[in-house]
Image 1 (cartoon, rainbow, N blue to C red):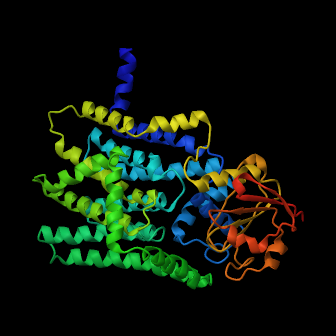
Image 2: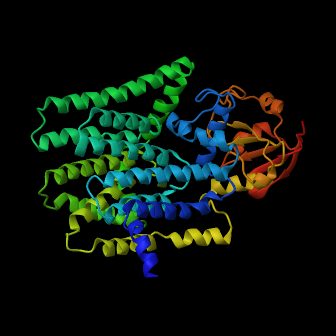
Image 3: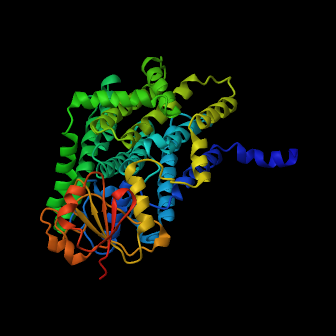
Length: 496
C-alpha cells in the first residue's frame, strides 16, 4: 500500500490532475440531463436553426431567431457531426462547459497557485449544474459565458502579466463574440476596458499613453469584428434581417420593463438565489470581503479592481434581461466564482494546511449543491427535462410523432411550420416556437388557409392559449382524426 501511495504521490500533488478530476465529476453530473430524450424549447429553437443552415438555409432569412449568430456557429460543428443524435450534441455542450471551467481555472492561477485554485472552476461548474439556473441546456447564456471566460483569461494575462497587445486583442475578439452571442454580455465585457481605466485612475497611470492606446486598440478590435460580421450578412443579402433580429427585437424585449422595476426584480431574484446555490452565497460573501479587506500588494489591488468591475457589470447585464428567466442569472457565474477564489487567497495564511481546507470546502460545495436530486431523477427515469409546461409538451409531441409526420406548430407568436421525418424511436424532434422558421415557405405575416392546406400537416400542436390562432385553419369536417393529450395536440387524417 505504501509503495502504491508513493507511486501516486507525484500525480496527486499535481493541481492540474485535480482539476481534471473536478472536470470529470462535473461532466458525470451533467450526464443524466444529457440522456433526456427530447429537447427543451430553447434547445429546439437553436438546433432547428442550425439544421436549416446545414441544409442550405440562411440564418435570419430562411430560419429566424433573435439571438446573435455566435451560439449557432458554436454548436454548428456538433449538429454537423452528430446530426439528430441529441445525446452526442449534449455531450458537446457539456464539453463547452468544461472548457469554460478550464479557462476559469487558468484565470484563477494568475493570483492563486495552490490547491484553492480548484475552487473557482468547481463553483463555476456547480453554478451551471444547479437546476434552478438551467445551465445544463443548450442556450445563449452558457454559450456567451464560454466566450466571456476565454476573454477573461486573455485579459488577466494582459492585465497582470504580459501587457502584450496580442493578449488584449484576443480578449477583444472573444468579447465581441460574446456580444454577438447574446447582447446582454456587453455589460460583462465592459468590465475589461473599465478595469484598465479605473486601475489607471487608482494607481496614477491614467495619463500613460500606452493605457490610452490599449483602450483604443480594444475598442478597435471589437469594432473590426462587428464590421466583418455586417459585411458577411451584407454579402448574404440578410443585413437588414440580421439587424432587425439582433438589435431591434432585443431592444424591444429589453424596453418592455422600466429600469428601476428591472433592478428590483433582479435584486429579489439575487437574494432568493443566496439560499439556492452555494456559489452565490460564497461569491456574495467574497464580494463583501473584497470591498473592505486591506490589501498591500499592487497585484492584489489590481485584481480587486478587476473583480469589482466584473461583478458590477455582470449584475447590470443580468438586470438588463428584465424578464428574469432563471438562466439569465448564469451571467453572474464567472464573477462569483473568481471572487470566491480571491477571498480564499486572502484568507489562506502560509501556515495553514491548504489541502485540508480545500477538501472541506470541496465537500461543502458538493453537498450543498442539490446534486443527489439530479441522480434521483436519473434513476427514476421519468421526465428528465423536469421543469416547465413547454418541456412537457415537447415530450408529448415526441411520443406521438409518426414516421413522415408534417407538424404545424402554433404559439402566441405567428404560426410556424415545421417538417419532420423523425422516427418515433428517436423520441424527440426539434420543436421551434418563434416566428419565421422557413418563412420563405409560409410567411408568418401573411398566412392563408391555402398555405395550410398546401402543406397538409398531419399533426397540429399549439402552445399556451393559441387555440384562437388555429381555429381559422381547422374545422371539424376537415381531416380531424383525434385529439391528443390535454387538447394540445391534434392528429389529422391528412395523408399526402
